[in-house]
Amino acid sequence: MLTRRTLVRLAGAAALTLTTAFPALANDKPVTIKFSHVVAPDTPKGKGALKFKELAEKYTDGAVVVEVYPNSQLYKDKEELEALQLGAVQMLAPSLAKFGPLGVQQFELFDLPFLMANYDDLRKITDGEVGKGLLARLEDKGIKGLGYWDNGFKVMSANTPIQTPDDFLGLKMRIQSSKILEAQMQALNAVPQVMAFSEVYQALQTGVVDGTENPPSNMFTQKMHEVQKHATLSNHGYLGYAVIVNKAFWDGLKPDVREKLEQAMEEATVYANSIAKEENEWAMEQMKASGKTKFHELTDEERKEWIETLRPVHAQVANRIGPELIKQSYEALGIQ
Image (cartoon, rainbow, N blue to C red; front, side):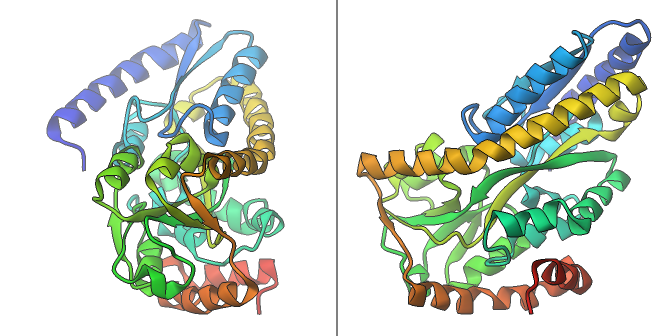
């Protein structure tokens, strides 16, 4: 939760936003969109945010100015959603695990280990009825969902080899705030540690946590490979983002401005998702070349063991996500 001082600051910023943004629309003055996120500018999400800025300003002929704030410059993980709801910022792209604490834990579907095998599976979810239905759930929270941006499939890292589920015994593993990720680590007999993304490097460096999970692009841009001796290319889970906007702000835009911003977002989404796989492959090459982390490829037998250990998490957390939602996802993916 935010401190009282922070809430007062946010409320003041929100009031300023509401008193300046909407009149500015009426007077044809530039509208400012503050787009805050917690990762580096050179990650797929960071580049997607900059692409949206470029296109939004271009298509609106300067009627909208987008200010991008990367690397938790404005808010950390736990603060940003409240800041959005209060109107202190207008746009975010939080990871899908962040919506659980907001009361929309159905988004934790994406955290299920070994649910989606590849990007084709992913599109069946994000572009289908499951993905659309999840975004619609945000509107009661004062949030409008605009689309899904990829980061990629995750690898596990630690300072000891983690080739089999038994290797996780007792390891303190950093996770995002997600009951599914917590259950995942517990299934591996590891100790889950919820921690803000901006604090992970130092925690790994000082031994506060032993390891973590990330797509390669996050691992590389945050230099986690410099403080992790081992990693396994498990691709056990997916990390992605929902691009969201304050609903009152969005609904208050002139229709023609909103239409142009929707076009900018659609094109920025195609761009961000097209580079995500390429960025992760490049990041992996860089980390391997550095020699700081030893990467392990799972054999077919090892992967089978990982799946057998982690798939039961689906049933374990079904009541939290919703059995019908999991069933709908299985049907979309052809899982028996």
